[in-house]
Image (cartoon, rainbow, N blue to C red; front, side, top):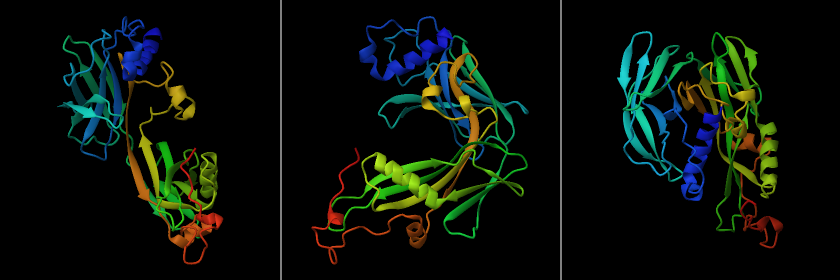
Length: 317
């Protein structure tokens, strides 16, 4: 327990290392060599794995070179692949080591990944890829409902089931200001219903609009003239072990030591799974019936500029 707590503390310290200079070295006493993050995806031919070496010296720093060899083994056949290292610039402007392999894992197969240091110390993990499922959009009697059917003999581990509304607060036509974009994700995980040959998710657009309204109101964007530029429904099918503490992916809970890791002699989590995504945007009349605005306020050809609808909305609070 102590070792894992220190490892988490060390990782939190790395991005602001200058502010941690006077603290004791959090790596001392840690025997595990690596923290690993990633998942095997049986629906793509390119696999990636984030490898974070655990250094024993606080001034070691990070370089483009990494002391690690990564291999994956398909346990049923013994087929082994060596992964190649890359040094990647992430969106937060930090660099990290990502190992890449060009192969497509099979469904319902067990794999072992080994990450070995030059002195022979290694971290490893075994994972079984999930079953192949079909996710099919269905027709509905009401256009305000979207229905997606997950076809599978047994209920797979649905790690994620979200619809993302790429919502905007429309600005007056007389304004040069761009619409204020505020994407909102609404979870349908755990809301599946039994259906023939599988399970069904029913997205209720009008109900979701009220959630979008509340989110806009909470960020000082007002509930008026909320439009939507895109809608995407995503289901992520994971391996059976991909179950977070308490059943939900709570960042605060996952930050706790020993909360969610399956790496032998290491930290982090390596799973298996794949996403299935559908474009769910609806016609303007359906969006309007659900509550979304489909046109900007304050048409200068018909509305005086002194009208309240012509007021430019400031950025969110």
